[in-house]
Amino acid sequence: MSTTYGFTNKYLTKDEKPWFPVMGEIHFSRYRADLWEESLRKMKAGGLSIASVYVIWIHHEEEEGKFDFTGNRNLHDFLEAAKKVGISVFLRLGPWVHGEARNGGFPDWLQKKQDEIDLRSDDPAYLAYVRRLWEKVYEQAKGFLYQDGGPVIGMQIENEYGHVGGYNGEKGEQHMRTLTAMAREIGFDLPLCTATGWGGAATGGLLPVMGGYCEAPWDQRITEIEPNTNYVFSHIRNDALIASDHHVDDTVTFNQDDFPYLTAELGGGLQVTKHRRPIVSGNDVGAMSLTKLGSGVGLLGYYMYHGGSNPDSKLSTLQESRATGYLNDLPEINYDFNAPIRQYGTISDNYREIRLLAYFLQDFGADLAVLPADIDPDFVKPGDTHTLRVSVRHDDTHGYVFVNNYQRRLTMDDHKDVVLEGKTKGEPVRFPKTNIASGEYAFYPYNMKLKNAVLVSALATPLCKLSCKDEDVYVSTVIKIRSLHGMAHLRRLCILAVQTHCQQQELH
Image (cartoon, rainbow, N blue to C red; front, top):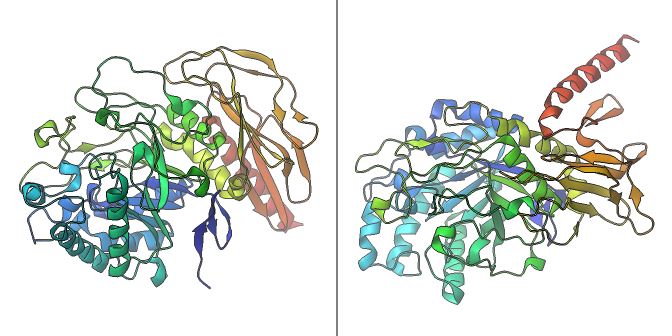
């Protein structure tokens, strides 16, 4: 029986059970084809269960009517590698993708038709070009889609539609519905279909996905920008910082009560611009990820997870630039993004940091997914360096206490003799006194259901569960850490210890 996928208004589902995946973006056309399998294995080793990929139109039809799916543009071979590795795929079909690509991914020949064709609309002439592209993409993907038993389980329609270009209101919503119907008619009959949810974007009733970045290299200022809200526990899903160069507001167009809180664009790093070149640390990404977990998300999706390089071209450079009418100048070739896996495949601290949250979600994500976030205080200003930021995800019987005392580029107050409380329907579970220094972030379980016991409380961050015959070994760390980074070595030691334990059992 094949695996089924879906969602409730609280969480994603797999085989009708709660599912908390981790997803990361890799652009096959921006990386060497002979290294795709290696990179996908690195992503899977990092705890990811889904690879998301843009299909960038200008990479495949730079010259009108001449399609190129060869070499590192070969989507078929990339999907074949994903199937071999055993990682699911989310196709972000566009047709407009942004992705720091020239014209947002539109070929120059199409962009030049904007005086005669209403691009990103239901104009039949535009839709004909989109259909022609998607039919070619379908030829590449056929055999690897969910209905074929393949790794492609979902698709994203358009990107930042009505937010960065396109239409707002009913005209925009209708265009999203038109594109979705076209994709399904062509053959992309996939169980999960998403749309950008931030910045007032039109979603067409699709599953909205959100984002969050630790800085804004697209911001037109060259001064320090305001402290980032992504380090504050909050029920506010929208990150108004994304595409702030377009002066969009912080509204959403969908009813948040109807959909789970999902992210597809948490910044795994940041791509530099000519005028603004922030550096992203593992702590920047780790603390932001933990804050999103404490805010109630049900999917950690990273953009980018794997850096790359813009491919060779025939007619122009392929990067976003002011020469093409955009507000930013980006490198012609480099698309490193300071990502967890860098431009040439090296592993960064970002990878090592968020891998540990991914390990936790592999083993305990189904439990966390169903727990709503109870945030206290309800909102802390991101520039507040004095108030300890705390959230509890719980169901009145058990849960996890999240603490973040990290704010990028700020020094926070140290907090001594803190007594954290796990909320229940009755008396709270009180943790022993602990000190929380500036820069620390962690989460702690209480009344945690183990196989044959209940862990009442622990000032230890859960990491993973290791199995040995009929015995489960639960691994966590009691090390007070400035980041989650220190757990990696502990995990290796625990795996070695469990292997040794299993070998001893076999001897006896």
